Length: 299
Ligand code: ARG
Image (cartoon, rainbow, N blue to C red):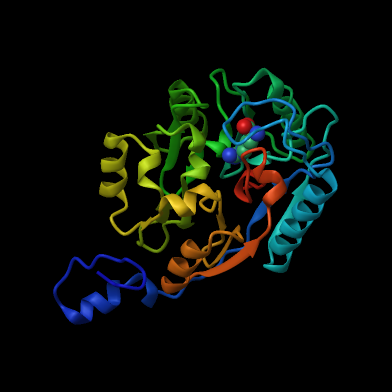
């Protein structure tokens, strides 16, 4: 095993070992398009996950500042950021990742589990229609979109256990026309897939996707599935997960993650990635991080 990046070598031949070592691979970023929503009306006034405590003060102006810095970070990295107008009375609308899954220009909207967030889905549906998307389907089952769905370039990894209904996984497969792999979440602190797993590099040129995940957030069967599908994954620790460090956004080279996630950042550097740290402390009071604020518009 490589002491720096934790990569497990499966070959005994030194030459092929070097070739297979993830750090030896040049990490190539690809330009992305994201949809974000300014946290103008952000507060914590209800409790729908263990991070939320309405008695803890929230500084909305600071949340806006941190969000703006995140948006500017993406722009500096060369990505295009679209925005949707925030709505008063929807404090969690900043978490745009929960409101749509877009693959090849096809959109599967969302249906929230918590009644407090239900109205967000239609605002995003309208945004898609107003912005030229013709193939927009709204789900019948509870579906918190990229909160629970991660696209690897080959398959859609789909979380369930707390929010998204397993029936939504079949709906996603049918609507988006991509194979879906269901993953079972078991720790209420990691209630969405995107706080327990993220895609570092999508599958390309015959190479498999590379992901990072925190095994203890998943059931035993799911842990075996992940180990089988992604033997070279970055294995995250409780320390990485507890600051929502896994709620990260990668463009294939640059990985935007919370400033507290220093251990994970060091592991990523050893694998040839470029960590880009952002302060997202206000939004974490609602259980969110960089990825929650970022929906990817693919195609
Ligand atoms: N307070 C929000 C909720 O519980 C946070 C959502 C964070 N989003 C995410 N993609 N994990 O629904």
